[in-house]
Image (cartoon, rainbow, N blue to C red; front, side, top):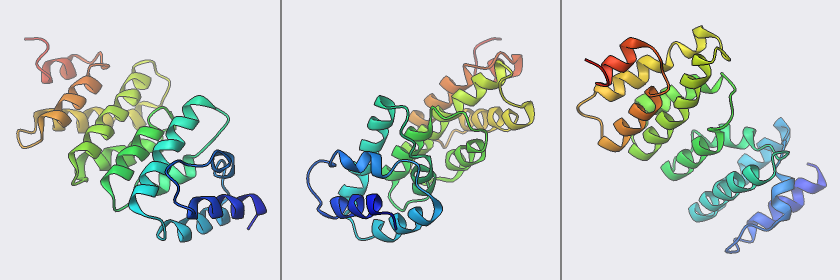
Length: 185
């Protein structure tokens, strides 16, 4: 374990009300072996600490673009806590990596928590837009719109999730998408 990560994990174990500033650099660009150490420590922290950490990482990453918490956020997409999962999606939302598409579609279709599903729908909107601009492969963007349209059409889905799906579909120029969301006759 590198000394920096060791110090970072020690700071996180202290469970203070705020996340100490040195943590942000220490958790950026983790290697696989460092991720394993973080994962081992994760279960020893309180739920509140884990939620605050992911939220703070998101804020810090927006303020300092050179910081990269992708490895952590990808891992926490599968966390047991829905707030951590939602925050993870929000942290990855501006990433245009096409490998996120199936992860977000899966969250939209199967996550038991409505806030997580809504966050996934919102995150998928970026990929609809990237597909419209032909900045991602059509094959990759192709699964996004059907998943969003199925959510829009689902009478059993909560309105908050359907609303985010409608907003995401709004980026599509496809006539069928506009018709399916009720925008044209």
